[in-house]
Amino acid sequence: MNEHWSRKRQILACLHHERFVSGEVIAQSLSLTRAAINQHIDALKDYGIEIYSVKGRGYKLANPVSLVNESHLVNGIEGRCFYFDETTSTNAFMLGHASELKSGDICIAEYQSAGRGRRGRQWLSPYAHHIYASMFWRLNNDISHASGLSLVVGCSIVKSLADFGVEGLGLKWPNDIYLDHKKLAGILVEVSNSSAQKTELVIGFGINMSMSVEQGELIDQPWNDLSGLVNMPDKTELLIKLHKTLKADLQLFELKGLEAFLDRWNKFDLFIGREVSLLMAPNSVNGICRGIDEQGALLLENEQGLTRYLGGEISLRAVM
Image 1 (cartoon, rainbow, N blue to C red):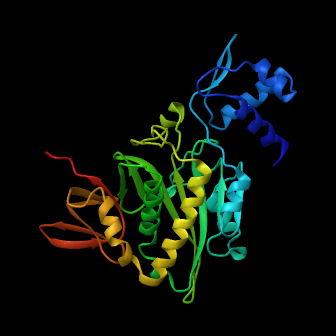
Image 2 (cartoon, one colour):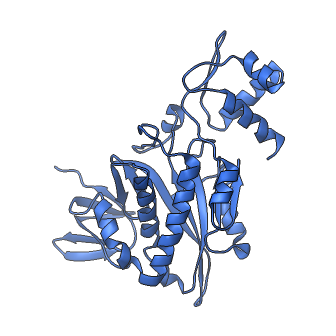
Image 3 (tube, rainbow, N blue to C red):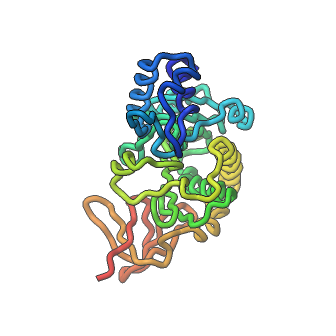
């Protein structure tokens, strides 16, 4: 870890969410000048950390931050684990090193300067607030056998969170996890390399743990995080659990396909049996959501019958 991040992590360790800490106390404990503390505080704000500053009282975190315990993480992950304070995006890192990777290798970062979601959308990535991770996986088959893989990843994330006691979880086809009907997590699967013999994938996922008001105002849809839970999962333990569950589920997917996950998906599907609109720009189609099939296609029923769709995004249809 370079000096740049070592100092900032030390300062974050001095700050509290519930009370103010004077700059003088922080400076004395770290053997730094007050001017240096001010500079680091300003830099942390640039990385998306909301810090209150009150003259005569000092500094206070607007909401909790959660840093990974690197040694515990690396020792708890089976396979290679790349951990960074800062990167452009975890998916980009893994795509750039795909030729060197094995299935299950994972990249985790505290901050992404260019985090991405589906369809080129920006994924806001304030430092130490959430989970940003990407796992490499190699399927020993052509790309057609990857159909429905993002749904498996969604099932894995929900199972991992549920094992930590999180309730109110739901799945939205094809790539989102919700908590109390607001978006909690997203998935971005990208193909690194594909042939008739193998398909190499980078599976990216982000989970909101503690969103600041300032960052939340930049999001254009209802969102949720884990900060309101009575027992918020430890970030490091959750990452270790996610990695283990995801590896096991992907191995099962290779053996038995999406059929092995249909019951799990249906249990958490937010839209099954509901009237929805499927958006396929510039068009849309309305109908009753009937879940998914064994290839991961959305099943939509209307006056034209039951039709399967592999692309698009669904939303609840407004009742007139």
